[in-house]
Length: 79
Image (tube, rainbow, N blue to C red; front, side, top):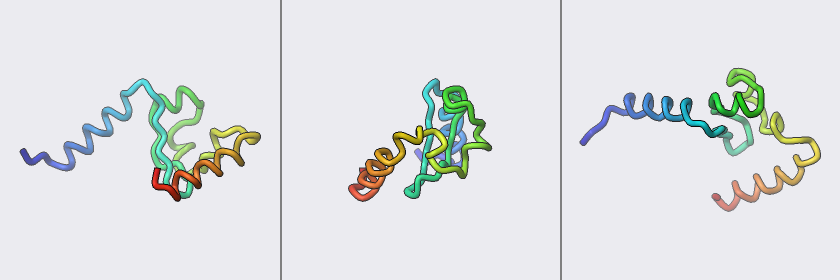
């Protein structure tokens, strides 16, 4: 069965927005590219505020060094 890629994309967006869990997607540089409504409820930033920002937006300053070490390791290892 061949599905229309636009319909699949629309369905994925609908699922992403209606899930109860916060979903945040960041690229390999740690820049937020996707932020759903549950992430807004959890962190208080609207999608337009979060998209394009560093993950530092939601990581307490005292934990940033450890976060970025782990993030870099995950990127290098392909995890």
